[in-house]
Length: 259
Image (cartoon, rainbow, N blue to C red; front, side, top):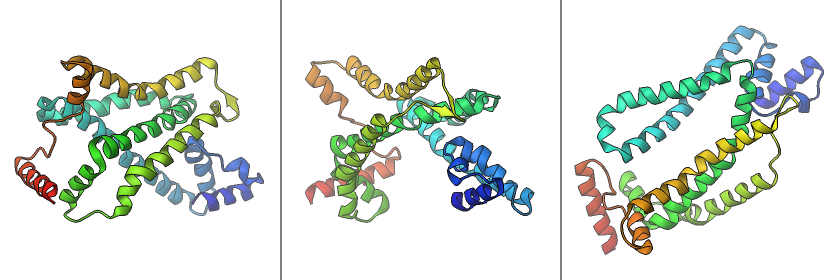
């Protein structure tokens, strides 16, 4: 969709495609709406475009909100009875934070967050998650759980991908992103030094949670350092929350060990 609309906008304005097909949030909120407005029946196409954009945003928020709420409820199981209110409070808090992006300088703030918070930190979190599942929990245990849920065996391709290919590819992307990272700009405007520091702070804020929680778990666990590591990496209550499903899962695990 981007290529034909960018070509139309370039033809109508007389500008080269490289000048109009810029990346970032400006493409979705500035360039694309202007190009859609040049089509026949612009009101129809603009309405369809922004409805699509709204649905994409809502769909993305489902995943993000559910990830936050699930993490909170896993750590504090007693709050499960108040899940509706926790969901409402989380959505309201994120709404308050996002209001700043609707101001006159909102595009600059959105570009700053997108530049730093949605690149390096996300890749690192994915690397840690893949390594934790494939190498610490064990790819065979993970495959066993997946097979229990879907009721069929997993192809070997996925095992190799989870254990070797994906960690290597993500690590390569992570280091190339750092090496070729440039300072954030928007509309040719360079951000001040304090804004760049704020951007890097937002980037490290999500990454520091991983070692921070690990240190917290080690500090609250009793025993020697070796015993603390072993206890922290072992979950005694791991498994489905539903009693019936947990019983079936334990039977599935025992059969897998016997095989």
